[in-house]
Length: 565
Image 1: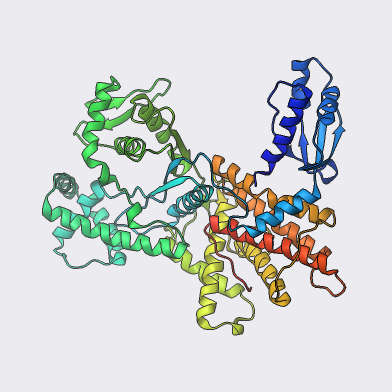
Image 2 (image 1 turned 90 degrees about the horizontal axis):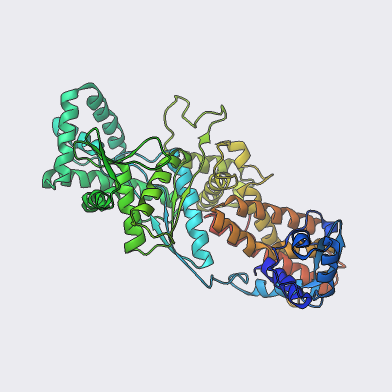
């Protein structure tokens, strides 16, 4: 249900009947309940165009406004605002239709687009750390959202699997004669030891660079060792994704190495377009208005991140046919993506019609306001953070004795992982945020646990009722009117969140919905003795649609619900 579109169409029809040859602006949410459900403020803007007083224009619109369907009431306020009230009978019918539909009345887009969402992007040969958390969570939510709305979504995990680090690892492996199986935890320490050698010994560093060339030239021995490191690292990533509830698989991996064969062509094609300038032996692109050039090939022939990203953009636009390409990468990479996007368009690698986006996000901070670290000042491993979330979640569960150990573990995982994800998604993604266990595992405020509690509370109502809902929704008072209107706003919220790549708009909506339902539940008894049967059925139906909406919203965020809490 595109609620605002329904109302806008009524306004548009009134414009036509009134002979106003202009496209009306969209209605907005009313700022206060006494101002109705929505407001139309377009009369002010038309005043100069039509040479009339705004109130006079508003009166003309009102005279031609249909108040027999979507709308039941309209009033002029102030200098020419029009306050609008939805028809409670129409509202009730639309809510009932949504309740009976598996997609809650939300139709898939009529004009779906093919979207590539690039997210997570861990480094190979190292364990994932908290720095990968936000990209993985935000990117997965955006992919889920676009998929739900009907777009064709291609998830891409642009892992770092190429470069000096792999020459360094192989050189060190050869040096210490350990060619047996390496586990990931060994590899973490192995990487630190190899890096220590690389930094301390110039001869070793030179050898590591030579091994990079050997990998790139297809040396079978070096490639076999390189593949071993990649397989071990991807295995670890898959463990993290499973625990985090992120829908990335090996099939979604398009690593740096995937584009190797195209890098020389990227450089030659840029040259053919007249975009390259040689500077200090390097091939550079100088963009108008930018002080620093973009280097695409070093003097020694090596390529850079910009070269690989240009190859990836061309592949995604031309081979995959993407119409929207979204990179979920932290805000510190803003300049890099601004440059790469400009070059890709100017070189014709990506058509002008393709939307390129850097979905930037801020840093996760500790309570001290500094980037999140271990007590010793080290990088927090992501798998350790998620394990801790499950342990802390288990501590919040009351009546542990009512669960089997398996049920308790499953419930703790749902609560703990949900808390971590929701805490991240509930803030403006471009903001830094303070990681706080107490806040994210609270039953109060805009938290995952509050949402899960609201859903579980509704399920407890149905367990107590233990019957079928028979009858129609009837809007009986102002609170039920507000709850119904809020429920029908869901699709508009999802569409806006998709356009702006803003998951926090979904969490804000869910929190407002759950809070409103709690008020409804307290003030409008459902199963209390003496409640009229017709009223009971209507309120059960509203509770049912609320639960379904919360569950669908959390599902898009990658968070599970529980029936009992």
